[in-house]
Length: 489
Image (cartoon, rainbow, N blue to C red):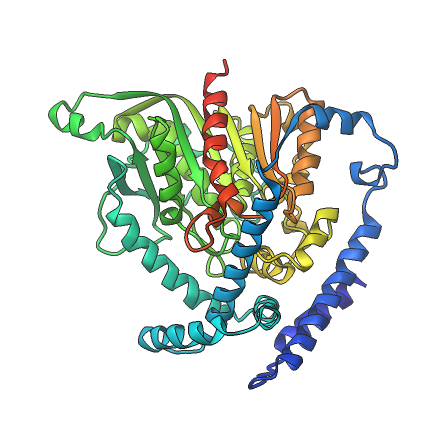
């Protein structure tokens, strides 16, 4: 049955229906696509373990253990929050609908003119028409158009990021990639100690490249509230000591996003007197680079920071904390699993913000049902992200380095203190709950903060033009968790 559903989905994607203006035809195709996915979810639901926490009729010891370790964040004024959320959602409908028209144009000049025209047209449209157009766009994803949109967004972010004067240190470094011990689909379970640790390699970073090639160098953005490199220029022997260093992996479904998107958030973090350096990895993205390329970049950056940062960047730290949201959260757990698997230094703490703990649709979670009408993480978008990053092989997709939900039991007892930040309306939430309970059973220091009335990706909704007020509470909570993990012995 599962093969039949996957085959029907593949046939559906090959249909080249190009209705000129009929929303009815596109809506029908959207519903047909949605129904096939719904059957696939129901099928995986039948296969789920009956001992799973979400299938119990009575409260269990596992559930009580979880309740004691979770903190719920409630909006100060729920009616105001719901109104703000509705406004943000309608703004998102508007811009997705506009983008669906704009991206038909072949060049940036036409896109600009189309943007202005369609913005006026859709501003006058009814909300239900916007909703249909928006859902149609999300369910009938055109990868070329989506790619154009994100390329445009990246170029804007790049320019804005370079204007940022809030951080005293904001620089790009390029770490050379060592090929000899790269992860491949054939050696995911290897326990061999990385060459970076076995041998003293010359892996000095570069600060400028004539042409950046992501297959030869890993681009990493370094942010800090204090530019210690100026002191190094005066005294080459100087080494700056920090209590905590953060290594951050951005979100974006393994397909979009970059370190540029996160600079505003971390500028707010620095404003709260966090003085440690933050290393942000621009790992390779799909669909051009499939798993495990992105994980390779994050893993090798982690090894480089741990083993070479003092030598080349003159920075010494007591603790290293991994931080990531959504797909970045997945990579946080992937790097942690690799450090345990290969018996190297394990991070001193990890924070996953609504992490993607599973990329296999054969594993059901009740919260996944939210994705059928979720504005941020629609089911079609979710499947597009996974298909773009991972081979269509359930054995690969269910591997614990890609689906941390399946982390082996023997790894769990070696996990560092762990913090989850989730949202109550997130389709990915339940796998974080399952994993947290597994860690609690191993007596690991783990806690969860759930923003009850938020959706996936909510912290970015606090920025213009969405301006979701309650999303602004994310950074203070993140700062609190970083300080909490830094203070642990």
